[in-house]
Length: 265
Image 1 (tube, helix red, strand yellow):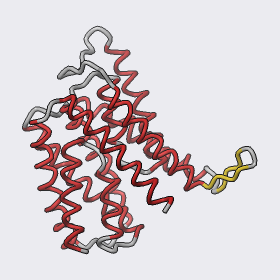
Image 2 (cartoon, one colour):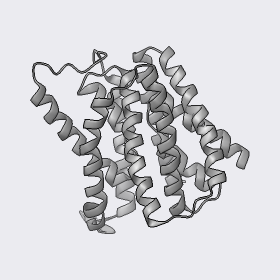
Image 3 (cartoon, helix red, strand yellow):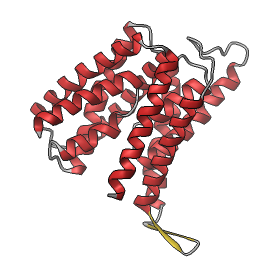
């Protein structure tokens, strides 16, 4: 099981490097079911693995000029702020049972439904999108509007990712491509950078709380995810942007279907 777990970690790294999303969605079940890590502790391990893997991918994307650092820093602020406020204040106030037209909906089921719905929506947006993406964001003529849009979209992404507890790459990339006309390769690189910043803050919080870390296991996992993300980033440079959008949409849709299948089985 451990060998298969390491192979899947490599696959997670490839996916993260190739489409800039799916890291936290994939690594958590791998840690729980193949490395037999307690689910609560697995969330912390997941943050560490995703943070460092995304950092490796970000460095690689920076070297290949597939990363807009300025945009990533600006866009990450409302996303991180909104995620924190949602997790800290909104999520605890959602009741464990929601009564809707005499139908009882459990909180976990509601969050899962929202998660899957957002993934399917993001998938179809990318599969159907016909946006003519450029290499950089053109905001010369309407900088104020573009900055306001960054904040508004970032707050919404933070809200939804805060509710479902995901890294958010599956929402960040469609937003960068559709709203800000970013080239798919740069959108993936920028998404990885934002995911690194988000995950790093989470890691710092866990360290402050004081978690027990199996450093040998983490280092081995990072070796496989790190090699995977570098390989995925290499593939990304070869593939056409339109093909990357289709791959992104298909992979996110497959992950959503798998989640539904697991929950219903």
